[in-house]
Amino acid sequence: MEDIKEVILNDEQLQEKLTFWQKKLRLQDWIIEVRVARASEIERNRAAEVSWVLPKKMASICILDQEDYPRGLMGERDMENDLVHELLHLHFAPIHDFNSDNEHYEIYEEQAIESITYGLIALERT
Image 1 (cartoon, rainbow, N blue to C red):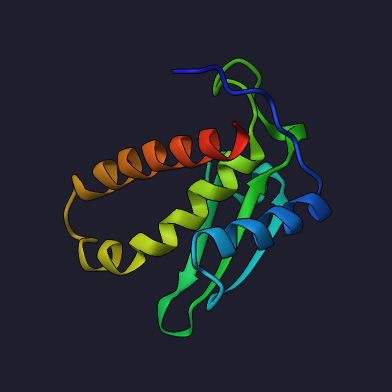
Image 2: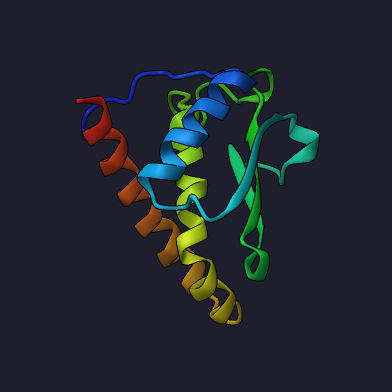
């Protein structure tokens, strides 16, 4: 795998990336907010998280503030990668909700989303 360079975004840049990726991923029919959040607002040991209301196609994405990002534990920081990863969860949301009782499903979903995210980011940056 190619090394991922560090990409740190402010709130305004995150909004721009959200608009770009929402269109690219065909999620324009969703109402999505994204913001930088402190560690106390996100589940422990996560770089980002998304919550959704599927029937309303509404979602909220929190990206961990750079101040709280643990250096050396999670590799280079790439907030755009975090954003795309969380957006892809929205495509999996109906399947995720249907499989919430399957203890292995979440692992498989995360692996698939991480691979797709890496590929999309690599394509966009070349």
